[in-house]
Length: 457
Image (tube, rainbow, N blue to C red; front, side, top):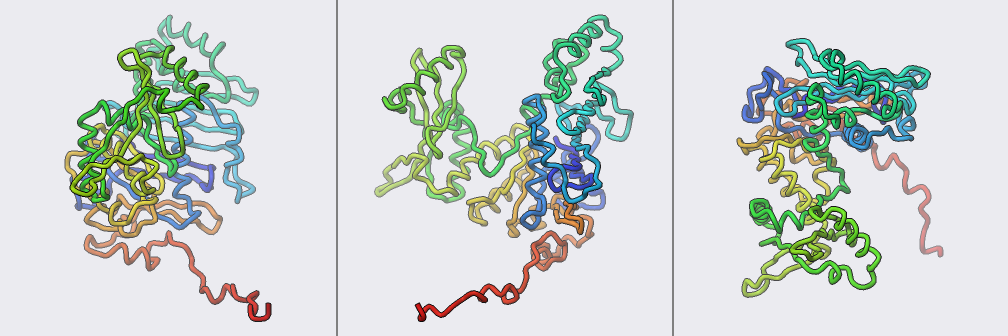
């Protein structure tokens, strides 16, 4: 579960901004949208609205950047190009911090960057404001790029821990590399909590960009009957003309063709090295092939979509023949199943992209009304039809806009203390909550000043 995320001096964030999933105590609507974990309440949904360029996507990009730094153990070389540039006197320190719950333990993880150097990186078991935070590790890098690390007392007092600390500092810790993954991969009983924290970034958090695609969907359709049934029921309910999903399985050489012999050889080698694994790749922009070894044979799987033809005859289409909207709906099937059953945190940028407003509202309604969900769904959108108090609590609707300095501000609808029956969609479109584009009078733009009489040609 995500509790809060803080960002400063990155992209359009010129000062410290906090996004959180904590409910407003005065609100009593949609009580089933509150999860109770570790003695606190957390919300299951959040939608983020704002004009183009206001910073909606930047918030999601900042979270994704933090996740990638942890997983890939590196600070992007060009991160300094993404500091807030509209304030020449601003400090150069960039800050990302997050509080979350993984396996019933609350964590705080923060990182401060100057240039490409990690000045501070710290991980604590969070006391959630009720009790002191417990140090797991804290690393600091000085002006000479010398790094020091402090661990929890039990680790520091242990002989094996002291030896491991020395090895880490001498051989592995670099000024521009986060160490959470490094610490999590150590086989030491005092660092098990770091493994849980890393698991949140590696598995629980799922950031979906507009171009992102689910991986190995054809294999999941082939091997997971529950998932296949869920996907078919969801798509059939949305009435987009799909009646079934199929995974076509052939010899990989047949799917690729003779002209791709080099690619076939590469995949064969990868599966020889890991015979129990899968290798997923894009054969074209719209077609994913999943390669695997089954019964000693190298096979490839690709997704096919079933439609009903005349006389109720089943007709199978390749994914490339489907509309962009249908492809995007298929992209969302794993996400919606996971947030309902697996307790993952999905953060989606531009959730409505290529999807009809009524369809996306139906999807959100399905998640909103489901009382058995386990995960969180957070997304940015322009779709005003979702501004409905039957779908969202007021503290689940967030707005972003630029202030006079060009820095992104972030605030929830609950700051306005609106009545639970008010039409918030109408208020938003009328500019009541800010966060909408300023539309100049088209005539004032004087677009026609260079027009000429075509009859003169």
